[in-house]
Every structure is written in C-alpha cells, then in structure tokens.
Image 1 (cartoon, one colour):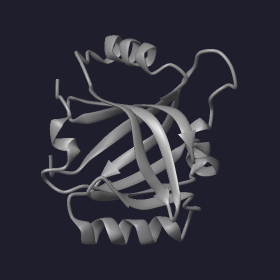
Image 2: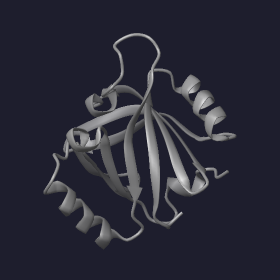
Image 3: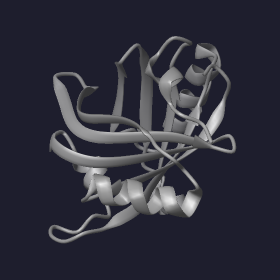
Image 4: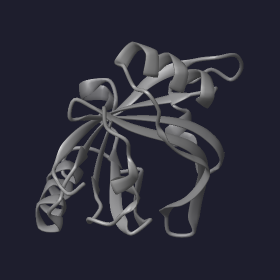
Length: 154
C-alpha cells in the first residue's frame, strides 16, 4: 500500500477484546495481527507490543497492547489495572520519503519527539501533541512490499 492515508490508533490493556469491540463498531471483519512484535524505538531502545491493523473505507485502524520494554508512550492513558481502550494517536502514512522528512522536520519544530527510528523496513516518528490536540501524532513511511501490504481492507 503505497498511497498516503490516515490512521486512528488505540492503546488497550486487552488486545483481543479491543479488536472485537472496535471491529464490531467499525465493521472490520479481521485484522492483520502481530503478537509480541519487537521493534526499535530509538538508539539501543526496543519495545514489545501486540499490534492489530485493518483498513476501513480508506482509514487504517491500529490497536496496540504494550507488553514490555520502552513502552511509556504506549502506556499513556491506560490504567494500571483493569480493562481500557483509549484513543492514542492520529497517524499519517507518507509514501514519499522526502515529503516524510520535511513533515517530520516541521513537526519537530513544534513538538517533542519521544520516539523515532527505522524499523521493519521503514521509518516512523511520534510527536507529543497532547497539549495542543489531546493525543500523539505518528508519521511513518514504509515502501511497497512492507508488512503494510498485508493489512486487510473492508
């Protein structure tokens, strides 16, 4: 999937339950599931999380359950105990690396960037826009042939 698109991302304490609930609300039949995905979050930093991805009417939905490692950004909004699913970030996919780099530079001038790294054949960056927008922003750029090609669409 090389085109540009937006993503609504949720964090949760129960990945399977959140997939079922969001799937029922949004009309998503199934997700691309990535349990226990290990990914780089910065120099010598890694996180492990369960991820689920699905596209619905041109919008991508992502569900993240943080598991271990460098997960403080992904824990934001979640309780220490019990079930919760919370809106976490608005994501933007850029198919052009030069445009991605320009947008990242502009965002860095405005917001802190707690996570940014190359991973899984692409690159991504999170910006802490909570004071302005109430949530994080994620910008990412993955080429054709990446894991994103397997995300189901409805």
